[in-house]
Structure formats: structure tokens, C-alpha cells
Length: 113
Length: 441
Image (cartoon, rainbow over all chains, first blue to last red):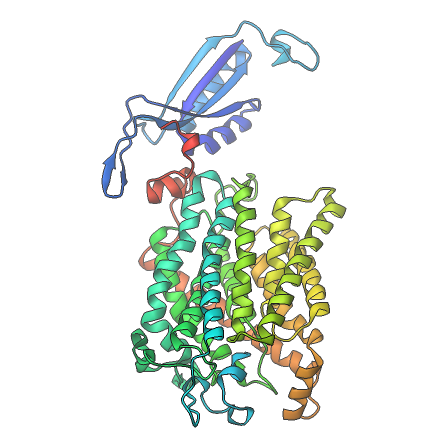
């Protein structure tokens, strides 16, 4: 089992989510997060340039069985990328997942996902 | 409607221009009436931030500021426009065969520096009071096309819309020499703006929503309100401001003012009560959005009627309006067009129900006066006048709105790109975000 964490641009959430659902990956958790990578976002407030040090992004967390890792990652890359790709498109982290438990039934492992 | 009586000298000189009427003695300022009119003007302006909050709470988090800016833009744009030419176009004597009014003396309000109206109030107070109506009317349209229009397109649109839709309509309905003012026995009844404000903005909004098309993902994606606390507060501010809107439309501080205020209160409460009852019976739960919608439905329906109906009529109209508006929103969901925040569903529908429905609840004294002017004047004859005014308003507003929208789309661009729509108006068009809490900065 894998735990996939993706940090994506806010405006791409709908597209990514719809594509994931089309690929039959329907169990996801979404969070609003702030952080910084290499992207700089300059805004102007009352005529003054402001460079916020933390930029809002959306984080998607998906737990899946090994067979679904590639399709999940590919779907996110395909839909979250701006055109040919630009700074700020985000990152995906894939980790091994030790266990997964469905609280309702107490099932464990792959079938609980 | 009613200020014909207040501004005019006597029933006999109804043909003369009340705004220019000169009695044997120059009118004297009535401090009571002036104080109330200034208060009303302030109350009506308060409705605009109220509307901004109402709409701002209903959109998604990414469009809160953009949506609130639509209302505030109307304050800025129309606030200037009205003083420069709007008042002259609306309340000047007939020009172009009565299609619109015009008086060069009213340009920049230059000619009214010393004027006290026959109603005993300075003309400045009347002009500013009317100006607030011109501000809120285009702002209402924003609800129909929320979350997908560009800010510049909106600025251009409201400028043209006020000049070519609001001012002519306002002239027809409220200027003493306007078309609708002189229909039938005692004119088409529109006390405070059922046709001019609500039907025109509702029908125009619907036309604009169809012209621009639905938001990306509508209706498949759920588009939940971001903050109903705002919406409830906005509805509350609108309710309070509406006392100025309706009771101020008597252009006096007297019995008629108190009558208008009373029926406004009763209709708003009935609308709210009816809506939450419908929800409780149909869906088992009364929602805060339903409460806010019911308040608005009741307020809109009583707007044209506030001068002629009594408490019984106000209760009936409030209840009917809530049912019709609720039904209209169900119908919208079935038809699938994207009147995003139900500008037509509530303002258009409520306005039409009010303008037609009021005919059945007019107080007896009014019928006596009408009968004295045209013998045998009855419900059917008045209903025909009301229906004519409603149809003309819908037709005129829809056609003109479409022409203006096409022009703005072609010259400036009205609908935002898909990328802007997805990121949200706040960040893309204004470089800001509404809620700091969601961003740790």
C-alpha cells in the first residue's frame, strides 16, 4: 500500500479531482495548505509590491493499493501541470503505507482502502 | 407613484410637471419630511453593503471579494453617473417623444441648488434618494452572473445599463409625464420600484445569465455558499434598509409613510415565515438560506404595493411571493440555467407577483379615487394596466440588456477565461484573498 501526498495549485483542484474520479480513484482527502517552494507570487496592495512568503496551495492525500500507484500519480501530473509545466505546479510524495484500518468494521490492510 | 400627490399642487393640475410646479407661494422646507428623506436616503445606501454581504456569502471562497466588489462598483460608478446625467435623464421633462427625460439644467444637478420641492423637501434630498435606487438596481443583476464576469466588463456594463435601461424605465414609471405614470385611471402602480428596480434587474439578470452561459462545472459540481453568516447579516441589513426604500418612497413623513413601513415589515416577516415553513414541510429542515431568501421575497413583493395595500394584503402577498420564488428556484434547477444567486428567481419573480398581485388587495379609498376619475374603474382594468407595465418592463430590459452585453463582450470582454474562473476572481482580478485564516500569511 502507498500513501500519496500531492501539493497542487488551488485552481487545479477541480480538474484533478474530476480526473481522479474518472480513473476510479474516489477516496481522497483535501486540505488547504500554505508553504513555499521556488514560486514567487507578487501582489500589489495600495500601490506597494508585496511578496508573500507563504503561498496557498491545495494538498491531496490518497491511500491506495500498489496497483493504483502509477495511475494515481500519472493522473495528478497530467491534470495539475500548467501547459508544458511551470514553477509552482507542485509536488507529489509517495510513501509506503504500513497499515490501513476501516474504523466501522475493523478490517485491516488492502481491503480496508 | 405616490409623490405625484405630494409634489403636485392639487389633483386638478396632475398634467402639469410636479417637479417644476410653482404655487402661488414658493414651497417652504418641511424639516420633518426633509429629515425623514435624508434618513431614508442613508438607509437605502445601507442596502448596497447589505447586498454585497448577501451575495458575498453565497459564492465560493475564491470569489467573495470579486462578488462584493460588484455591489461596491455600483456605488462608485452610479454614484457619479447619477449626479452628472442620471437624474436629468430620469426626471427631466419628456425628450425623444417621452422615451427618456432630459433637462440641461439638471446636468451636474446645477439647476436644483436652491430648489425646495412642493413636498417640502430640498430637491437635493429627492435626487440623492432616487440615486440610491439607481445604485442598487444594477448591483442586483450581479447575482445572476456571479463568479464568472470580469471587473472591467462589469464597470462598462453597469454604466451603459443605468443610462439605457434604468433611466428610461425610471422616467416612464416615476416622472410625472412618464408613460406608465399616466396609464389608466391613476397610473400603473409601482410605489417603490417593483417594475423599475426588481423586474428590470431580475429579467435583465436572467437574460445576461443566458447570454454568458453557466459557470464551469455547473450544475454537476456542487457550489456551496462560503459563509452563510454573511448572507444572514446581509439579509438583515436589506430588511432595515428597505424601510427607507419603501417608506421613503412616500416622499413625505406622514400617515402614508407609516402605512408603507407597516406593510413592509409584515410582508418581509410573512415571506420569511412561509419559506421556512415550506422547507420544514418539504425537507424537514429550515435553513438559514431559506430564511434569508424568504425575507427578500417578502420585501420584493411589497415594494410596488406598499402604497396601496393593507396588512391583510401584505400577509397574502408575502406568502404568495415566498411560494412562487421557491417554485421558481425549483424550476431553475430543473431547467438547468445558471442564475447563480437567483436574481431572477427572487427579484424578477417577486417583482412580477407583487406588481400583478397587488391589484387584488388595494384599499377601498384608492378605488373610490380611481372611480371618481374614470367611472367603473375596477380590478380588471387596473390588472390590464399592471400587466402592460410588467410586460413592457420585461421586454425592454431583456432586449436592452442583451444588446449592452453583446457590446461589452465585443469591446472589452465580459466573461472571464476558464483559468481565471477556476482560480477565482479574488486572486486573479483583484490580487487579493478574502479570508486570511486560510492562508498562514
